Image 1 (tube, rainbow, N blue to C red):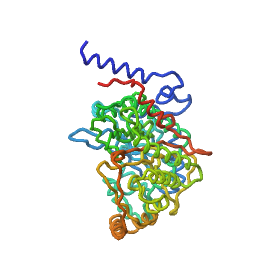
Image 2 (cartoon, rainbow, N blue to C red; image 1 turned 90 degrees about the vertical axis):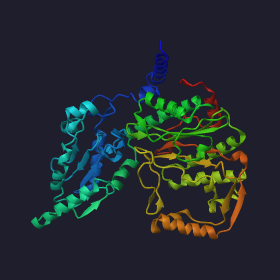
Image 3 (cartoon, helix red, strand yellow; image 1 turned 45 degrees about the vertical axis):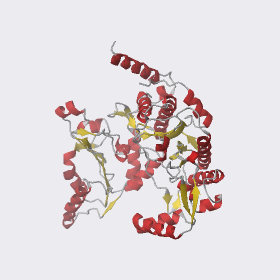
Image 4 (cartoon, helix red, strand yellow; image 1 turned 120 degrees about the vertical axis):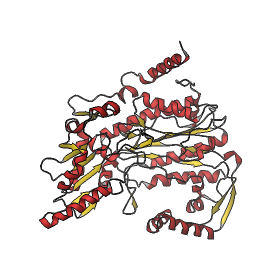
Length: 531
């Protein structure tokens, strides 16, 4: 048998082991879960069956909010990668949330006041020749039969039919800021304004449906939470396999390939975002995605990756030693980040302010950095002067859902919003010590982050930052050395939480995290071949 044939058989054998599981296991109950009899379903481009009812319920809730208005929500378009090759298509999240329709160039019209056609889809018509080349389309008939639209029309009829619908509607609900579509909508509005002379009412305002729609997306219904939970289960398996697989001498992209092989083996069609596999000093780059470096003995490897399933994504970060054991400096910083995450998770409870999560993490990190001698002042002064930001420069989390940085406001009337059951968020403290930074200049001035952001909103980022630089220049400073054993260490630990009625469910529980769990998993043999 040829070497390529042997390789193919080995990969198939590993795929079989990863994707075959007894009934009730993650693989059996996750990507392959069947629908209960009697549910009205529709088929997606991903080849799975999805229920219509959740989409209809979401449209109903949005329709109640817009009343007699008319909502126009475009889907995503195909985009060129290079030449005549397109990027993989992924539907716009807002559009899919309301329709379940995942073909390009479609437009949703939601018209609650219409006597018959409240849910209208404009789609690409069937085309036998193009479908031979590019895949099947639902077409106008399929949009009605498969997706439950009250009516559907070819997308090239949108302007004519929308022009008529805009008459006698008090408001147009459309999100400005969509290149190629904004001009079209504004031209249509200008055209229908002439109908005022004939006694028609035309939309007097354009309202952004985003805030209404995003409040719906912010709180998970049980079926949505189940989809997110399955994505987290698959991602948990992949992260554990990455720990087993990684070793000095491999390249970061090989670890990425192992991780994403597990995603696909369990039925995930795509990543939720580009995978980060950052070894050694690369872990100090927050959004490092090149994944090209060769892993060296003694490196830490930071992996930030999550799969997408049923249009919901996981988001997990783990940091582990490539050689299997943490060095004492690595272990000290790792345990500090782990303690900060535990405090932050404890603060994630219904009725608590969202910002309490970050407050808990930064306090523990500051206390630990002072103890390790990495900050020049005591805990109270270091917090007031935000000195921890030299090593921890991002927030402790974000909303998670259909998008990795999901929609929803973090503040209501300038106050941190309270956590509610159904919200899903990440908790991800970290520490990043630049490999080339021997000394840090700390500015000895207190300031309020809230005032800083208010100023940036009032004046704009550039003008506000100029003022901040001037204030820093006037402040006294303290030079502080960074011990060489800590330089070049980057650590982040991230889990996904679902807020419940009584607390929080850690959707990513079981992903190795303690020092002992991580080292034990790294010592286990990988189920994947190192080629």
